[in-house]
Length: 158
Image 1 (spheres, rainbow, N blue to C red):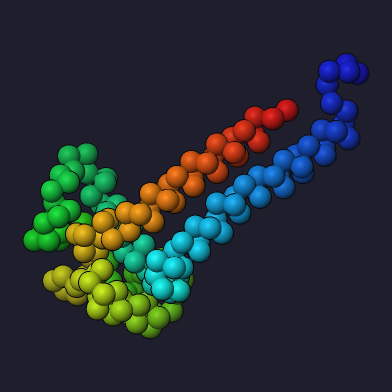
Image 2 (image 1 turned 90 degrees about the vertical axis):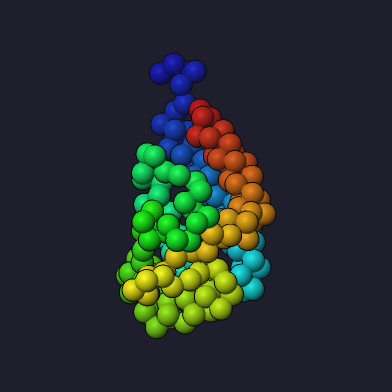
């Protein structure tokens, strides 16, 4: 065996050691992100999940269109044409949350002005939603960059 190559024992130990470091790096991102979200939603992580799922469904259709027009996101009259609609049942199915829980959260999000019901009761995020959570999103993105760099560094180690 060449001495510049790790022994079998060393090779078997390294992935475990790296796995622990990688898990720590992930947790160093995830726990503070959850806490930021918890505080941004006054302790209601389920509301954050419901709002996030509505947004993902709505905006996903707009992003899939190669000619997407950013002005359409600000124009509520165009939402039905450019955003993918959803309802409490589709959100419950997507998240695994009870439908009644989703309905209660949607009612609260609607009262808070974060979500509105369009024609046929479809749910849409309000146009100003990105501004509401701009600081949270910026902090999360910054933390994600740090975590990704740390994980990449760990993955590149011999």
